[in-house]
Length: 247
Image (cartoon, rainbow, N blue to C red; front, side, top):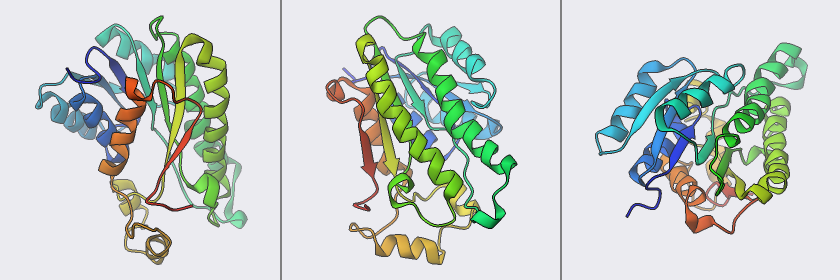
């Protein structure tokens, strides 16, 4: 039997990159998956197709976590009847030097990366079964290595780490485990678009990475499956650095 058979997972920001890889891995492990997207319907449909082609169940659910978290959760429950696993992967980022920081950019990143995560978790855990479930937050190693130019983005991920630890304590009595995955630089459509891949910055990251390369979405997804499954039944409140040894 697949380790997530009978479970329902909602993965936010799952139209591409890390989110898509996590959604596919959860589907392969037996979960029914709600593939959330904000604007990339084609990407979400591609993720859904990849899951269903392997015999899994999946639906695409549109909405930005910054302002539509209740809708996203309601459509997931309408499709599958409950939620057992929430993966808070949706996020935005930009490296902004202090001189260029604006209130608008601050709120853009915090509204999605922090407030959206909180509100989606609030809505989702209300739909968890009595036996509990798993919340998995996708944070980042930047909360520890704090690269320059990331005062806003680094702060959002530092907030995610603190929220993870706080909600693990708050939701533990309900048998809901809360953990975060903290990747390093991962090669995705987004990091290509942002110009990170092939840059001096990426080369510097590789030079500081004991395993000698940047990450791939497929390096992150198995950790999410572990945290979603009963294999991690005694793991909560942890931030699992998944960055090839970067500290």
